[in-house]
Image 1 (cartoon, rainbow, N blue to C red):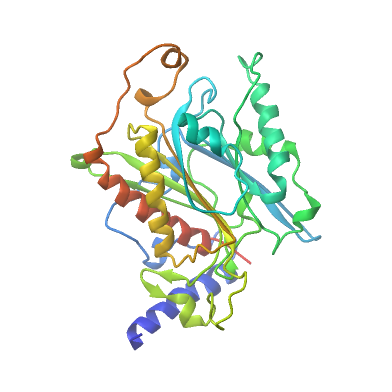
Image 2 (spheres, helix red, strand yellow):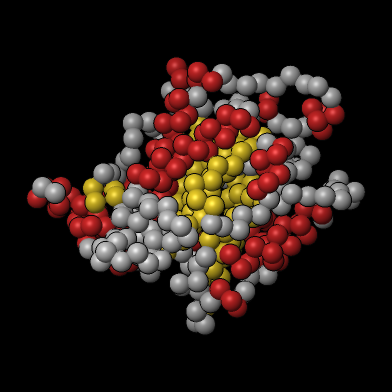
Length: 356
């Protein structure tokens, strides 16, 4: 590596480690605050998944003296009734070492009928219980006898007593009730409270892109829960190698790069579940640009959904043949570029906004 690139990589590394760790509350930085702006497309106003109209995010964070750092993050595709007005959705899997709940029905039916919740591995059942309580209690749901709850997870056992299972069903309900539009909390919040990425503190991160009107004018947003490893790259610079902290640095294959990442993708483009699957699969290109090793013990999942009203699976459209909008295959490439850029930047934000 040339001296100039070495210094640039070291500068970014200092921004990750020294900046957020020493910052006072409210002084955290996002990637663009230090000049790190992946790609060529323009972010939305908030540079967050909530730039996609109707998408809401809520967090509940649990911390304490007894090795407690964990939480729940809720993503609502729209503020209405997700069971009645289902959104088309798709799942892509990079490496499937994970315990994602609800995956098979997403793949079979191409839709989701609940909000998406994120938590830690051992808390999936209790979070699902809370999501079920919240869903069954909603008006109009008195006769529901089956529900596909979607709960993603990472293992935060390095920083959290995961066996204590501190998360209770009511924490899931609190995250759902806290979900709102607007700015999204990042770093050590919600399901990102106890995560580790590349040996440094990971967390929740988000970003967005707005396509020019000539390319459809669509908005795409991503939220990540980063808890994985590899050789950290930032804007093509090998930050992890520069600092001597990276997978296989000592030529020993161990579990330091194991972990997981949940990638949630929202767009207002009118996409079929087939094209949503194509979109979700491209998120792993953004993951790779950060230096992810996607090891044997890593659970790497991307869920994509469309909020466009003309593709929503309403009761009327589920009852009889219906016409729905469908963006042509030939117009997907700008969205592919958007999801790659947005995933990469959301991961950087998850690192930069995290505090030790």
